[in-house]
Image (cartoon, rainbow, N blue to C red; front, side, top):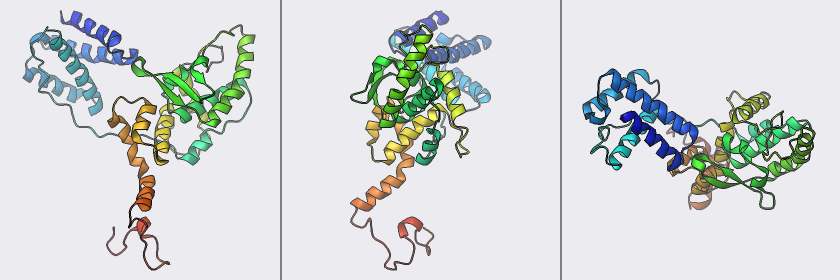
Length: 318
């Protein structure tokens, strides 16, 4: 019976909650592992006690390497049981008294503006060179996820406004913007793309970014392009497609954008997700403070000594 309820819940996540295929797949894996455990322990998942629910958490703790993985599994299970209670199949969830595990949130890797300029420096006028330049420029200019970027169609772009409609997580569309370098890269690329597709008999292809066969570029293929194109960058950082998204958020915040606007541009449903980028905006915040606070620009009387804001008070070590 519980397996049947699981399938109904997954169908609900797909059709009502509009969760992505990958998210539903992850839910299925976590919930199936949970039901397998109850079967191995000869437990009825429909009559689980709080003590037995905590026993499963202990089981996960032994085998899950990261708290984030454990919490993801708990989130899936809690959501499943809430659904059973809401639909009247259970009176109470045994996981209501189970807490998620504390985890340290890692700061995202990002590139400084000078490093990004190096990454975007792509030479060549061939179809693949031009396409790669468009890919990287859009990723940085708009902050889109790699899946959103490769999903852009020609009709999604508004050249007059410099905007693009992207199809985000949970089938949610949003508008993002392109800077002048990205628009120039697209304008240079489109005639070459059109001629290339005509030769292959694929002139009706709607995808902006195409692969060497003339079809839509996949997210995996785009990730490979990013990996190939960053080898010349003088940095020890591991650059992935998401590095462009992190760099976009960091740079627009550094230049004074409101965090709620950044949340909208990134397509985050929760502001707390966006707030992880605020740690990188301290330089900009200090400048604003210096301009706005009456004592913000106060300096030592001795002009030859170093700036107190830059190096602190040497006698106190601050």
